[in-house]
Length: 303
Image (cartoon, rainbow, N blue to C red; front, top):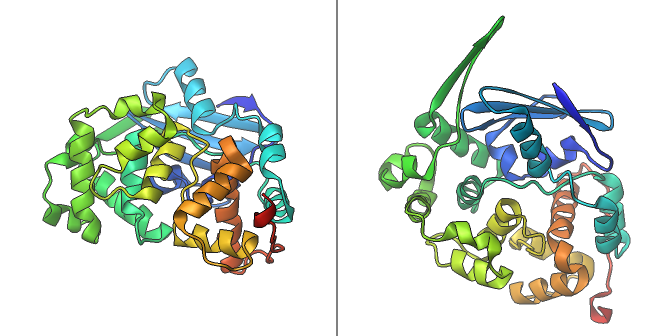
């Protein structure tokens, strides 16, 4: 195993906060690490104090592996600057204290697109189950043997491996009504319709382009941009985030999705995606009773 020393990092909070790697990787039971496929290699990452330890089974080289870990887990993000930018009120400061070190992961755009198309009207357990079944059905199998180690794993299915499947076939893997959207997005992605250029486009233009895809709405487009392209200004807003923002910042008053996007942009700017993830994770665990409710902030009018 190799290692990188890094401060302000928690792999547990990162992988438990419903990011794409959660949906196709395998977490260690104690939350200290995760294993996930990267092409024909299986990557292992774990936290050891203030270091990130990592290794791989398969052909990936050491330099390429270090780049992958640094990118995937956002290890170059300036967390002190980010916390100073998003820690604008008591709720956010509480979320940062509770989940300090949670990073935004940078995942393959296709992986991200598939995971979040599946996420619509779904929960984490079911999303993960569908993704895993698709991997078992369409992901190429790889085997590794060295000394006493013998293992096999499936890589993440390519867009091409899914594009020509029928919606009925995809439904057999639990996709439900999402099967049509999975097939459509896979077809668009596999034919190279310019999605590789999204990372260099203006955020608004890239989002507009993604929303042309069947099954990709406002929230899913922002998730793809945030977790697939590293666009930290994206603020994915579903019903759950909408309720949190309304409760915390608007005294429970209903707001449109557009108003919430404008609020997030004005308040957190280029780090709105980080603010969203801390809001989402903190609010989700409050809902399940695992965390005490943080204070409500009624300050939107002064922003």
